[in-house]
Image 1 (cartoon, rainbow, N blue to C red):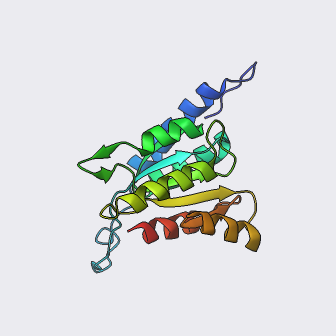
Image 2 (tube, rainbow, N blue to C red):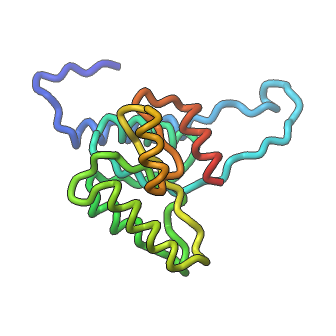
Length: 175
């Protein structure tokens, strides 16, 4: 179905349309092995994880969110470093509410570097708490970029040109 638009749509309209598509994809489950006549295999299904996407680029946000939602993860989004920090600090019974956080290298108001440094310092004070899994979303994947962010406390780095398999692999590392 095609819609002809006489004027550009707002980002909110595009984001809502994309959200509708994501929900439709999530609701379409492929037929199970029994329906295909194959014997049932024991599969280690990945648990549903709660993820925060703190990315300034709307395209990246939508693409990564779609990949995570397709794998049945719960995803929250924000566009700014202060908002990300506030969401990350919410705890339930001393446990972080997010299993993983994707941080844009160039967040506004509070940089990814500040967030990582502050979070890791907080975690060092309270050693009984499980460390939050942090993923840096960078433009490039050079050795220097990787070294810089890992030394700051990031668990993983992904670069543009995201592949669903790479995102899935990252989420398996969280568990």
